[in-house]
Amino acid sequence: MLRPSLRKNDQMRPVSLEINTNKWAEGSCTIQIGDTIVICNASVEPSQPLWKRQQNLTGGWVTAEYSMLPRAVGNRKNRDAIARDHRGAEISRLIGRSFRSVVDMDKLGKHTVTIDCDVIQADGGTRCAAITGGFIALKLAVKKLMDSGRISEDPISDFLAATSVGVWHGELVLDLDFAEDSAAEMDANFVVTGDSKFIEVQATGEAHPFKPEQLSDMMTMAATGCAKLIALQKQVLS
Image 1 (cartoon, rainbow, N blue to C red):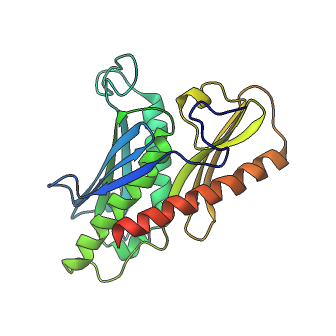
Image 2: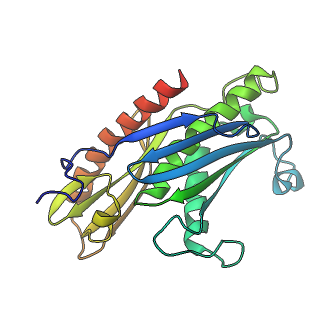
Image 3: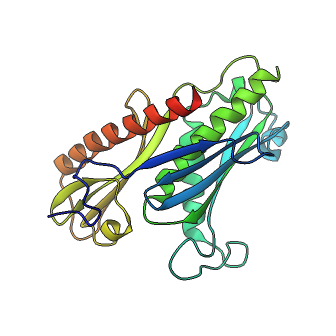
């Protein structure tokens, strides 16, 4: 069956990455994947988080906050500060975990890097876009730390990106937009490194349970999609 966007099953939506879109943030990137747009800003504090100081631990920390702005979707959504957003909190934790998996905290020194990912327009795949764009913001912030002499080694061990794969009308499809995601029989998000290792897999059988071989096929498609995203990351950072 033809996808609503007329894409091939293994074809991603158009992707654009614009860096240094915020004059104040140590690292920033605005990412657009199809009609999904996320602003990612990385802020650096020259201190450890309180819990690390209290436990007398070494090294820095990387964390993230994700939010969907009120008119990012069709109907106005209350701001997270007013209405507690459990989905946003879960995605924030996912983004932070993903970044920390490729960062050496001791090499980062006593710095805290916070990546804010704000969705200004949503059409599916917002968490994947936030991870892909947020990583660029993190890279730029770390580069600024190195250029200023505040750290001597690059603490980031590898690139990473994220994409979705689903089963839609019985067919495996890459990078679902909202129309596909809302009707998918199976939906999964994958965070993948530059050397094609998996950091996180979030898979759900929306309509029925799935078989191990289905997940394996999805992982293969996701790795190919993330490799394309990482190639774009490297291109924009070069």
